[in-house]
Amino acid sequence: MDSNDISFLDNVLDIVKAERTDDVPLIRFKHPKELEEILDLDISKGVDDVQLDKCVKQILEYSVKTHKPTFKNQLYGGTDPYGLSGAWIAEAFNTSQYTFEVAPVFTLIEIKILKHVLYLFGIPDGDGIFSPGGSISMFYGLVAARYKAFPEVKRKGIRNLPELVIFTSEDSHYSIQKAAHWLGFGTDNVMRIKTNECGQILINELEIAIQKEQAKGKHPLFINATAGTTVLGAIDDLNAIADVCQKYKIWLHVDACWGGSLILSETYRQKLSGVERADSMSWNPHKMAGAPLQCSIFLVREKNLLHEANSASAQYLFQQDKFYDVNYDTGDKSVQCGRKIDAFKLWMMWKARGDSGLDQLANQTMAVAELCLEIIKNREGFKLVNERLQCPNVCFWYIPKFMRGKNVDEKWWDLVHKITPKIKELLTLSSRLMIAYTPLRHYKNFFRLAFTFHPIANEQQIVEMLNDIEECGEMVTPNML
Image (cartoon, rainbow, N blue to C red; front, side):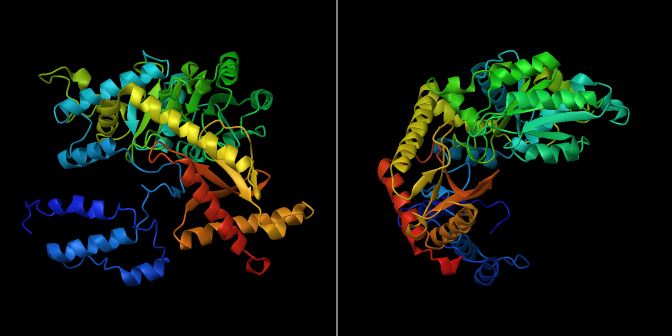
């Protein structure tokens, strides 16, 4: 193949289409060592296009088909086809989102998308940036909060700062722990606050923790509220937390990476009431909304804070004497230099569907989750973890027949804890369903079905998934545990 020949690209769409037909299984699971024996992954010698075509098809054969309705393993699923088109175009044009001169139209697109998203979240005069994921958005929030409270930190570092404390719920995403480590706060200064049975942070416990840390001479800096926890999909009482932040003068960040997609629904956005009071927030359209990975947004209330906190004024890139308006060189407010044009993927989706089309998808997704909840509630052998639906997360146990009617004690729950992953194993190996399971606080292992905009599941598919869980559940015997 000539170094500038793009003829192999003509094959790519056909290869992808072939792997998306209904008869292709969700997964052909093999253990790592088995896969290493099957696949030709050696790169020391080049191959011709015919051999490369064969290698690619084999790789996709053993890859998970995340577009299928039976992929329920994570908080993402199939991609929006318009978003996927945008991703392919973005990759083909291979530019970076740091200066207007190399990404003129894509810069305007990012600005336009951010302006619209800021409006939807109720902070129209704020600022934002596309980041490489929700974890990095958490970094952005902590850096912004620390810089706002102690602007000298940018030059002098953290040596002379008071001991800064972060507050978050016990069900929040683990990225806050990693951010505390990387940014020098220390994980011991992350206070994990208890939640209620629905997974929402307890406000009285939050206040007690703040007062306790103040009494130690520490500085409460940052409260991380969650709008859609990873497991239960819980949405914290954002207004109550905002009141606490106002009372103690603490930065409020809302992690809406999962639940933020409800802002697209006129019906369900009220679940996010209070998000407009946040100092910063994060939203991942690549999760529920189906934008291709990665597509993540960080928003901040104060207009120039991102630039002030993060700029390094690299002279070779952000010259101030350029021949155009350098206010459109947005890259200096980013922690990155090179940055993908992720906004274009979301713009393609939004341009094609408009606000009303995304509203419809959000409503359908919640309706499907509500339907699933009702079916499980009334189905023998299934037990809900929580009957309240906040995001499209449905969490439950399957109890095999040999476990029913017995004394529900600690020993019984220990068996359930072992049964759940065994059912997951049987489902995966038979390519019926990939579903998440987890323990949480005092709860033993349970299943989580999280629904997304793409593909929209229907009642028949829900029933089939539950039938498969029941079938595999009844295959489990005490001797297997």
